[in-house]
Image 1 (cartoon, rainbow, N blue to C red):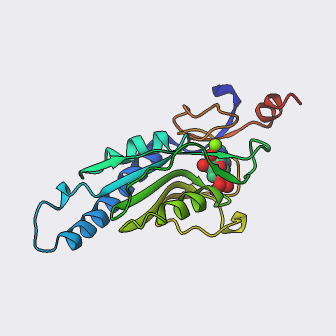
Image 2 (image 1 turned 90 degrees about the horizontal axis):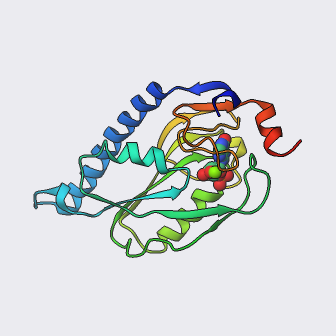
Length: 199
Ligand code: IMP
Ligand code: MG
C-alpha cells in the first residue's frame, strides 16, 4: 500500500492540529446556538439537540477524530451515499443508499464529509436534511477542491484544508475502496491507478 504513494500532501500532524481547531470552532458555535435556544435556562450542553451526520464511508475517520474534540452532548446519525457508476477518480452524480436519519426537526445538524468536490453528494444530503426543518444546518469538510470543479454550489462553513484539483487518498479517502487507512493525505503514483484499472 505505502509503495503506491507518490507524495504526502498533508501529513498526520497537520491534520490533527487542524481537526483540533475545527473542533474548537464548532464547539463555540454550537454552544452559542444552544445558549440562544435555552435563553434563561442553564446546562446548554445537556440539551441533546446537536446531531452530527457523517456521510459514509469517507467521513468515518475524520468524524471519529472531530467529535472527540467536542465537549458537547451530541448524537451521531450516519448517512450512506453512493455515486453513480463511472471511474473512481471522477465525480459522478450522487444517490442516497439506504435510509436518511429521521426526526431532525428542531435539531442543530452538522453534516460531515471527507471532501467537497463537485458538490453533488453534500448538495443532495443537505437538501434532504433541510426538508425535515432542522433548527440549523452546518456543513463541515476536511478537504475542499477549488470552486471551478463545483457542479453545484455548496456552502461549507467549516473547511479543514483547501487543496488543488488533485486526486488524493488517505485519512478516510479512497481509491476503489482502498487506502482509507493511510494516516496522511496522499497522492498516488500513476501506476497504482493504472494498475487498479488493469491498464
Ligand atoms: P462530490 O459529490 O463530487 O462533491 O464528491 C464527494 C465524494 O467524492 C467524496 O465524498 C469522495 O468520496 C469522493 N471524492 C472526490 N474527490 C476525491 C478525491 O480526491 N479522493 C478520493 N475521493 C474523492
Ligand atoms: Mg469515495
